Image (cartoon, rainbow, N blue to C red; front, side, top):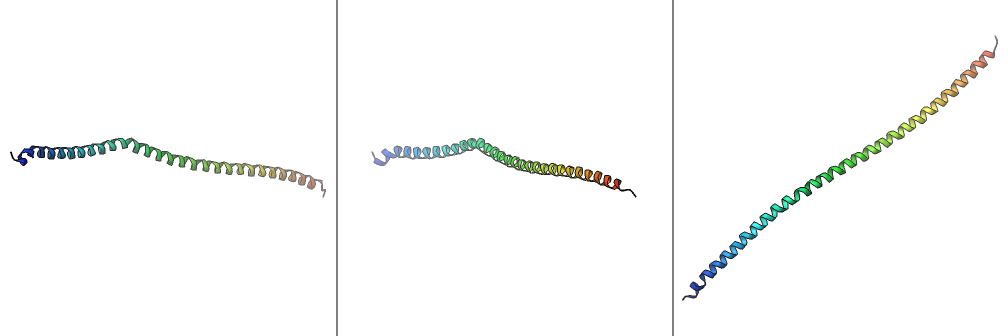
Length: 107
């Protein structure tokens, strides 16, 4: 028997095994890629949710700063109003006193 003929089926089997292994590796790589894509979807959604939360937090912080500024301006307005009321009361007292003084003059 010829040596090449004797090992021909073994050589064919080896080539078939290598090809089957390569096909299996390619299929496994494709399946892993699909699996990674499926598994990454929830992470992507969570990432977008976290980003939206951070944006909302920034907006809330800006609103809090604006409310604090409005509160400070409101307090300043109250203080100015109180000062104005005191000045009006003083002016009223001065007007009463002036009226009394003017009334005490006899012509």
